[in-house]
Image (cartoon, rainbow, N blue to C red; front, top):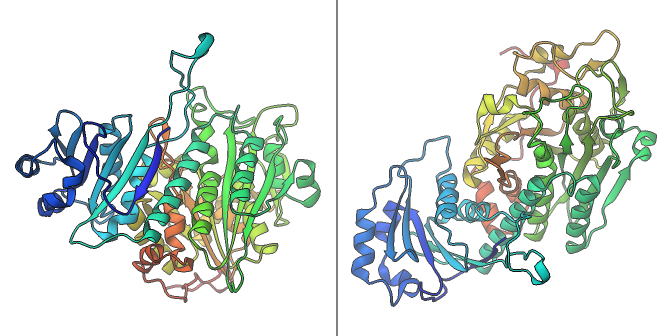
Length: 522
């Protein structure tokens, strides 16, 4: 539960009192003049010791060398980063910080190029999760004591010279807060982070940003036609909800909506999961958590356009009111869905969410984010989320921004004319799960959501499946926050985010896929 403090400049400190880790790529460390970090090492480490330690580093892929006892260290990141990895080596940076963190008030000094600044700051934030219910002995009257949080000072040295601006630091700080908020929600169990608990987190963010959330909950969902969210969550003791945060600054000319899957726990419903598959399903709200963290960071950093965050919240529980296989629900799109798998619930709530973003919020760029399929981890792995979109240029932009922010992405095929037939139903507009589970599951699951917008939708629609990157081991990663603020950085007042987005050079022409009605054959 460390407190993170980001600084423009190095803060003088004796490593005997404040342990320090200096970390960067070996080539940047080799070029680093001792005088630039002297204030973090005096009087315990000499220039000769520092220079020799760096020369002894042999990253394979990483390496660490002690400079003074175990209180001052220098660490080297991997030498190589492939074209599908982040140039910042952010994943290795997070692991190095986790491994070498002392657990007391300390300093982390990151040596990097300006292009890697944002990703590096976010990587450090991922190393310090907030959620914990651990106790320690030493409380009064026999009560357990909660450990006091340590302060971690995060500082940067830009390779090649240059300084950070106050705005740079604030942007990284906002993103770090969003990442840690997101990870905290995902790490919390459902007995705390149920629908009501998630709504309380939304309220906290709303109050800080001076906004008022809109909430449609329980039977209201049924009355207003949200058959997807209501059908999934109606068996739970804590009613389901659609919640919306809207930020509409003066002078805005465009409208963007982020839609998050917020299944606070997923038993699978009557298509119940096995005993080994159910633990960890507290993380099924990872998409909605990332949308909340991303919304916070984007607004705090000066978003210039209309931005809406739509949260589709439900607990997929088992009870007398559970949706049954063979039930047919009418979703907010007006389409009927025959339920053939109650464990394919995320697409149902998201279908309602994206339709609300289109019909009620009039968004022309809609991105939904979800821990949607186990197949995502098989298709694109533990580190790369999958992106499915009707826009070729936004796909390319998302891939580049993913590398810029270290929330990595890989594309999956967008081809509804070949894949959507998997959902054919004899009695309804569609089923909610595919006939052939061996046929592009990640794409098909996303296409179910897109079908409720309509494949003739003339705006931009992006679907990000991040079921595996949402966690690393038993801890949430905060995946998605950096991606969202970076991908829409061109709408930000912050220069740092503008540069992240500009790296992708996406023009205003979004190169939409042709509609199915006007499908072309290349």
